[in-house]
Length: 122
Image 1 (cartoon, rainbow, N blue to C red):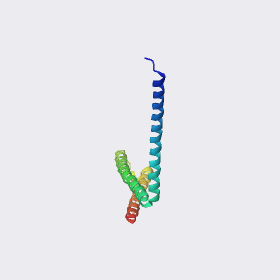
Image 2 (image 1 turned 45 degrees about the vertical axis):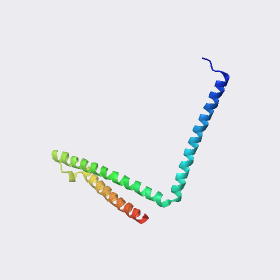
Image 3 (image 1 turned 60 degrees about the horizontal axis):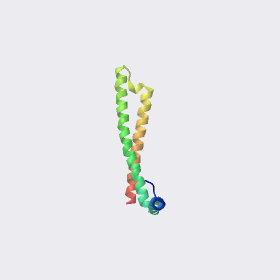
Image 4 (image 1 turned 90 degrees about the vertical axis):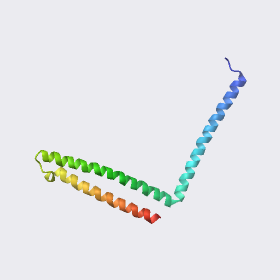
């Protein structure tokens, strides 16, 4: 069935309005994001607190990595003992233990500092 000129004009107008509404919606969304960002910037306490909480979440995730490292070290110890070696005498194991202790110390310090900063904000 062939559309009349009037129908074509109406569909063209409706399509244009739909595009305009979509564009307006996108623009309103962008404006809302800008306003939210400005609000965060103007309220540094909330922004700082959110950043600290985010950092604390990363530290907590790092603790799970810490458990993986412990597990890998235990497996290495066991395998090297099975092969008749003393893990504590192997350079790679010594380095791993040193790195592990440093990692553990950094995590503990970070967690403590973040907790103190969060308490200071409240």
